[in-house]
Length: 235
Image 1 (cartoon, rainbow, N blue to C red):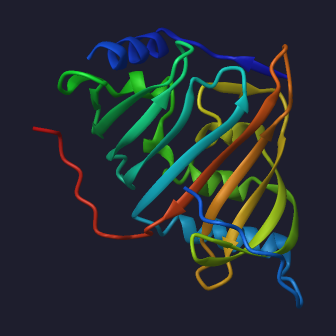
Image 2: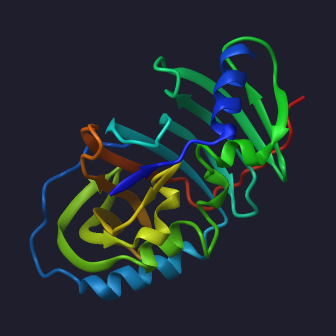
């Protein structure tokens, strides 16, 4: 069962914003497949070595507790991030530009300039600063995945990857399910690069229908590993 989590921070971010990609997948590859558990372990270890990344989050369907339709941006392991987010909590999508440096969120809505807010406001909606966190982010999500079953090979943004069916541990889903608490592990998939160091390039979780909502999927795609990135507060 999924329980919606809506805090004052969500309302603040939506009001402030109001006033103020995945490549095509190829077919399955033939040949012997690697051991799923070993592949998961390698992917988790490789993620811990990543210092910068570009991410794209996509929400498909109606999932209770999620108030974003998508987000994309660049991130450093220190937790500095810049990008855009589409918020749907008001019923109408509203795009905002954001920069997070340290404990400060700089948010720019459809009109006006950047406003300063505590970074905790963004955390209540979606917290991309945690993607590269070894204990709370992608590395933990991958390491905690169970029942891995390699399905074949596909291409993600030009990268050959193994597609692996998994179950994601309920305690590690924050990086994929912003604003949602789940009582159970959820099915999903990981796409892990064929080439060493076997980094995860995409992850998708399936959320079942609940409380009148149709459910859906949340996907995060990862590119530009360890590219030079400088993120500073906006002028």
